[in-house]
Image 1 (cartoon, rainbow, N blue to C red):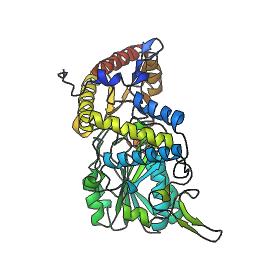
Image 2 (cartoon, rainbow, N blue to C red):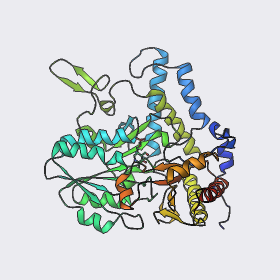
Image 3 (tube, helix red, strand yellow):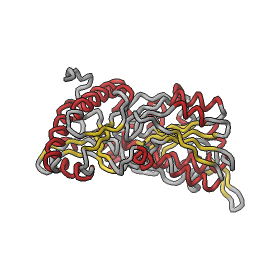
Image 4 (cartoon, helix red, strand yellow):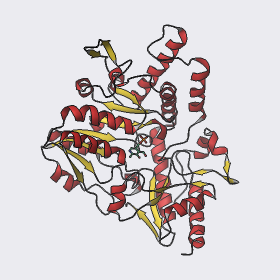
Length: 414
Ligand code: PLP
């Protein structure tokens, strides 16, 4: 048994999340699907409501008080996010709807302008579809080729293969910081420095990392970093692309429309400064402001403490889950080298059946391919169950998960 020395008091944290006070099917809600989207603390919900109740107006347009209030709250959120990931300037922070849109922005804007036939895009076998499909679409248009770094049976990136595939043909490496299935934390700093040696740039998919680890984009040395606000206590429809300023400046716009321009005639358009060049149309204003408040919330609790709490939770979950007969856990990275995610199957029980059974016990887990079909194929499975943890989860919830899984095993007659 692990000693219960929580560095963070999740019982206190839970009080900040109204949804965690509700019941489902007459049972206390146990939410173990934060890798899909996190729950939202009351301060974030209040911030969105306050925006609509008190100063709802478009940003960067109106000359009246509430428009100025909206603009300054929106820009303050950008400052907070820059500080949260240690970006050198708020001009390097582009608001998007999430990681998917951030990666598409880079693929279409940078990729379209820079990739040619004979160039290579280096991905890994553990990528989410969001970091595969945009590159395929751009490869089809430019003639560039996709190469894939394999993973080991332990669920780690095969770094020898990475070095072998990293030739001067590679123009961009697009890699996830933390796998949404295996939980593996990839050595992104090392990947960036090796890629730079051959003249390639690196996009890091931080969807599963930014909510859980302290992030310093300058220390990582990445050229782009994408994240989803809704996975880090922020509203849905909020996300961020961090980009190196010189790269963003050299890139053509992704979407055209209002606000991203300086002058427009029917013959020619000139574009706005960073980051507005990449924020065409009315942005997700309330969502960005809510994300700023989420960042304040996480910062106040401390990303180091959140990380330490999740290491304890994952270590405990791995230990308890291994008690279940016939369980297969995917990925053997030790708790210190993985995020708060555990994917598993139990014998021949279909993960969707497991998830439905657990739902009846008030427990929410994810079942399916987790938008990582190539990774599923690597492990020769169609789907897995996945429990994922965040700052508000407790060891008692993991006990409840294990107890319900043991019941499921009996129910499905293993
Ligand atoms: N990348 C990873 C590793 C993810 O886990 C996810 C979502 O689960 C995404 C990208 C896509 O994020 P979003 O749906 O917020 O755009």
